[in-house]
Image 1 (cartoon, rainbow, N blue to C red):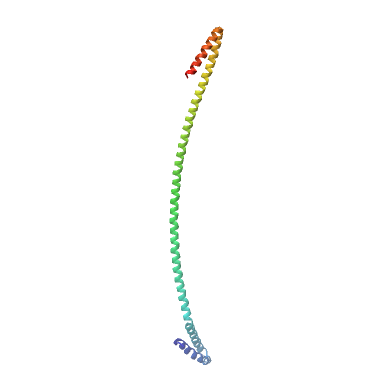
Image 2: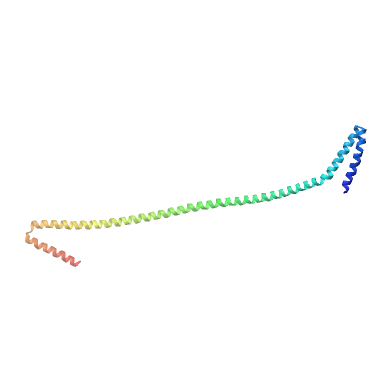
Length: 187
């Protein structure tokens, strides 16, 4: 046996032996014996319970220390992630502003391009219309000239028929046909 167990046993055995006669002595001795019993009980509890209690509190302290270290590590990780997300949020805002300003610039550039294309198309349509009008005007003038020639010829025929005799008529007709043929050959 170890020394403290022997000491506890040495105190407990005489106390138990003396408990019987003391009980007979009366009430005052009973209080003393109860106090001794209490001391013996506390001694036994301390002797046998001290090591588990010390171990419990040491383990508990170690667990609390481990939990505090883990909490500090988790807090540091959470703060790091929070800072990273804040940085990403700022970058996202900047990127959004950049995209927005690029979009506005692109829209303005596209609008200018569309307007320039529309102006060019309008000018091309106007030129084409003027050319078509001039061509149609020349065609109409040619048709009018041709019709005027036909009408002049018809009028000339009518006048000549009324004023000329048939012999003159034949001679003029031959002269006219000859001059037309000579112009055709010349061209």
